[in-house]
Image (cartoon, rainbow, N blue to C red; front, side, top):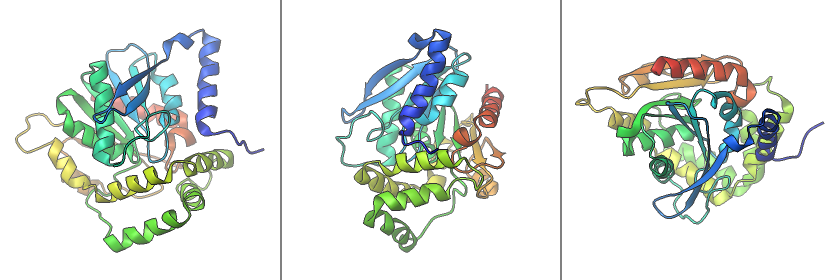
Length: 293
């Protein structure tokens, strides 16, 4: 039977029930930082490890998509999961939903918590967001790990290709988003999970989602990687890609712009490896973090 509960509630109840059973509900704290434009940015924190992990969600999602990582990593690391402005519980009173403004939301949390040596982890749109955040405050960033994004950082769509892509979203946001989300899962993904996430993401505010898409299209991935590791930088920021095998990743173009780069592939998953195969995803992510440390 397919559930109609929003994924935010499903994931929250799942993690909350585990914490209750362990008597550890007080460990999870919900806090607020204020971004450059005074928008409240809601985030959760748990754990007390020396290494800080900051997780950033993808387009039209929210911090609850990282609930499995919050639970898995809380006993070893200090873990932060963020709702970007216009998403989840964070504020909506913004007019320009750009990658740079989202990056400033991440910066706001890191500054508010006075965090250092942060490993930034971004899924999909969260990848460009954490990359831009690293550019804005590279003295606080230890490494960047991106999840199923940056398949070819030199590849760019033409204006015509992008307009053809976005037109159906503008005409019928809900149904087009549902179809789009279903198409980026692995063919063997759990049907309940696919349905739940497609319902959740299609309920996002269309104005936020469409503006975000346009900002993503204009984001020059290669140029921004060049910015975080300029030629005169003595020690490069490590960058790690963890991508699914659904789409090929051009590692050669990445190596041309990233000094300290490695790629890992998760097999038999689609665009949401942390939800489709959380056990394998957590294993690979933990392995990657330890290699960086």
